[in-house]
Image 1 (spheres, rainbow, N blue to C red):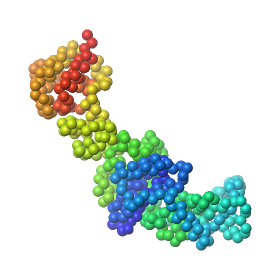
Image 2: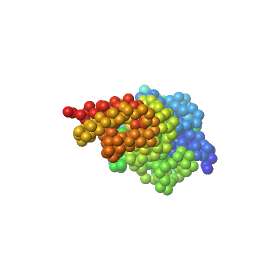
Image 3: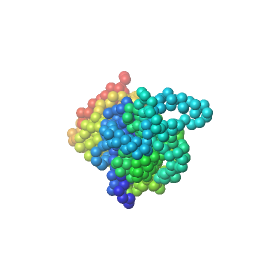
Image 4: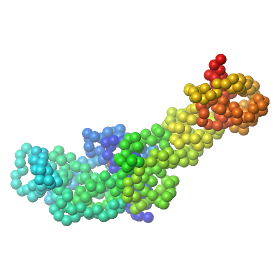
Length: 467
Ligand code: GLU
C-alpha cells in the first residue's frame, strides 16, 4: 500500500464527459481509494468561450451515476485567477519569467522566416534579457525562462523514461497580454497546490508534461509522478467516433447500461489482471495498480460491453431493477409480474432498455403482429383452435396464479382437444405476443388477467379469421 496518495481528475467542460475521460477518472479514483488517499475533482473551465454549464453539470451527474465520489469541494479554475496571478508575479519578481513585447505581427513574421529556412518555428528569446524601454502601445505577454540547454526528463509510469532536449521547448507564454494565465501554467500550479502526487491521464497530454515540469522547477514545487495512458481506439484502430462510443457518458444510462458494467468495461480498456474479465468494485480496489497499465492502445469493443452488461443485469435483485425502472419511464409492475417474469426477462436482455421493452411487450396490448407468422398461422385448424381456446379460458374458474397452474391448464386443454401441448404454442404465442420469441407462455398466462388473455385471443382470431 502506498501512503499519502493524492490523485485528481481534471476535465475541461468544453464537451460532454465521454468514456475516455471517465476511464481516466476511474484509474485516478481507484488508485487513491485503494491506498486510503484522496481523489480530487478539478474543473478546468478557464476557456470561457468554450465552456458550458451543461457540460459541467453532466460531469457531476456522470460521477454521481458511476458512484465515483471525490474528496472535498470541486475546484473550479475559473475561481482561481488571483492565485495564478500571484505566481506569475512571483516568477517575474524572481527573474524566472519576463515580459515580452513582441507584437502579434512580429511573431508572425518570425515564424514565417523560420519556416522559410526550414526551421521549426520558435520564439527567439529577444526579450529574455531585455533591459531597455518597452515599446509603446503593446500589452506584453509573460514568458517563462526555459533552460537553454540540457535535457528535460521524467520517468513516466507507463511510457518509461521520457527525455527531451531543452532546445525543443522555447520560452513559452504563461500569461497572455490580457493577463490570463495559459493552460500548462495553471495545470502545474493547481496540481502543486492541490498536493497531487500522481497524475494518470491520456497520453495526448504527454507533450505538455515537459512544459509543466519547467513550471514546477521554476517554483521549486515537487514534481508528481505521471502515468500517460494510451488512447482508446475503435476496432479499426482509429480515434473513437461518436458511433463507436465517444458520446456523453450519460447516454449509456439512457441506453440501458449499468454503471457497474461500464466501470468493469473501462477498467479493462488499458489495464489487465491475467485474463480476468469480471471485476467487482471491491476487486478493482484490491487489484488496481497503475504500474500494470497497458502500454498499447486499447480497442473499444461493443460486444464486450453488452456481455458485461448482461452479466451484471442478471445479478440484479428485483428491488434493484425496480429502483431503476423510473429512469426508463416504466412503473413498477405487480409483485406477481416481478416474481413470474423478472428472472426470464433478465436472461433475455442485455440492457435495461431491452428489459423494459420485453416487459412492455408482455403487459401492454399488442401493437404489431408479425406478418410472416400471421400468414403461416392462417389455417382453419388454427382458427378452430383459437375458438376452442377462448371457450376454454372463459370457462376457467380458478385464477391462474402460477407458472405451474398455467402449465396444467395448457396440458389439460391439449388432452381435451386430443393434441400435443406443443402443437398450439406458436398460435398461442402469436395471440399473446404477436410474434415469435419473447418470454415463455406459461408465466405470461399467469401474469395476465383473464380478461386480457381473452381479449388477446379474440384479437388474434379477428386477425387470422379472414373468411
Ligand atoms: N483538462 C484536461 C483535459 O480535459 C486534462 C488535464 C490533465 O489531466 O492534466 O484533457
